[in-house]
Image 1: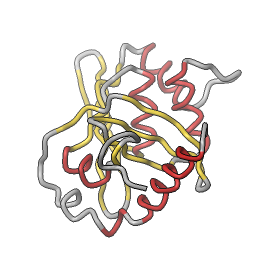
Image 2 (image 1 turned 90 degrees about the vertical axis):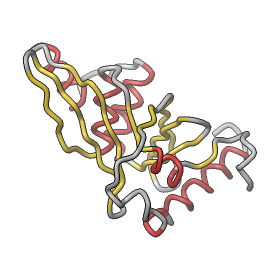
Image 3 (image 1 turned 180 degrees about the vertical axis):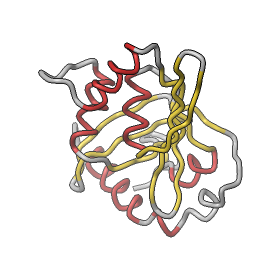
Length: 169
């Protein structure tokens, strides 16, 4: 964290995320919604552990992840390599060697939990796999595939990005 404003902003995100499960009636309804592509992904540390920040349309969706997945996402975003491959590096290598690709990851929220739907194509076939949201994000980044969220999720879970008029501390 660079300054006090960022610490305060992250604390607001942490507190707000803790209250999310009670405010997702629209996002949990299962109704189809317009998809929004995530434009940027960051990994940060917080008092509650690593958090992945999905950014689109001046909004940020915080998703708390375990340290190993945070490291994998961070490495995929920055291009840094670990001395030994992590699970997502291995999956990327396996899929690539068989001509497979991750085409997209769709992140949803149900019952207080984020989910991932990972679309994988192999020569001649395509399949959608249920996954943890963090794994879907990590593999999408490894393959430079789009990460999508529903507009309803972006509006209900997304916090205004720092510097936007909606943010009030």
